[in-house]
Amino acid sequence: MHELNTERLTELAISLGAQIALALVALLIGLWLAGWISRRVDSRMEKLNVEITLRRFLRSLIGLGLKVMVVISVASMLGVATTSFIAVLGAAGLAVGLALQGSLSNFAGGVLLILFKPYKVGDYVEMQGISGSVVSIQLLNTVLRTPDNKVVFVPNGPVANGNITNYSAEDTRRVDMVFGISYGGDIDLAKTSLRELLQADARVLPEPAPLVVVGELADNSVNLTVRAWAATSDYWGVYFDMQEAVKKRFDAVGLEIPFPQRDVHLHTVSP
Image (cartoon, rainbow, N blue to C red; front, side, top):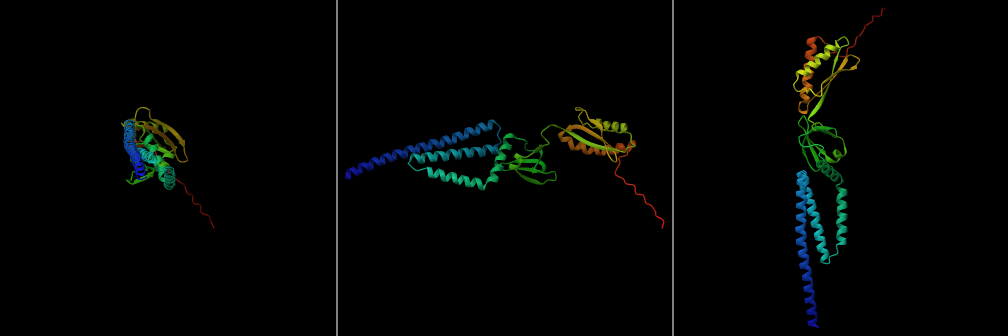
């Protein structure tokens, strides 16, 4: 009887040893494969010019997911019941997802923004009612610097689902301006003066040709609409300089820029 028990224990030890050895080999190979796959995915994303922050995150996420699968598979090989473990892991993932649904929404938005690239660092954009230059694109937020040098963190979730205006996407922009003259002023003289000022500014592009037309017969003035094209970087320079140049030219040629006026008549009533 003693010899029989010893023989069974020996067989059991050999069987368990072989099983453990096989599980160990499977674990090592599985971990190596997980690292190899994550590196291959990272290399592929690098060739596709995926943003480095997203690349690192996805590589870590893929590697972690594969390693968890390897550990579960090895545990199953050793006879460990993994069904309850997977159920607990799923429930924990659901609880974490519900607790972080806002952050996950921002993360998903960040992934979309990095992949589709509606803007890049350095662009001047408008999003969620905020305008500024893009400082960085993070997984959860886009960082903007406003013209008055404030730094604003805008959550990526609403940005990805909202309207984005990228003022730097094109090389040129149209500068729209309106200048009013009095009803007694010479329209042809005003249009000629405006065209001369536009031609004299080297930042105004010859093509498309600038447009100078009567845009509106307003209550107090005849409004001339001016549309000129300039390089995106010259937009505000052209706009502000034209305001000053037009005022000086109109004064020089005798054109009045009207402003709202009201005549008040006083009537004296005799007692």
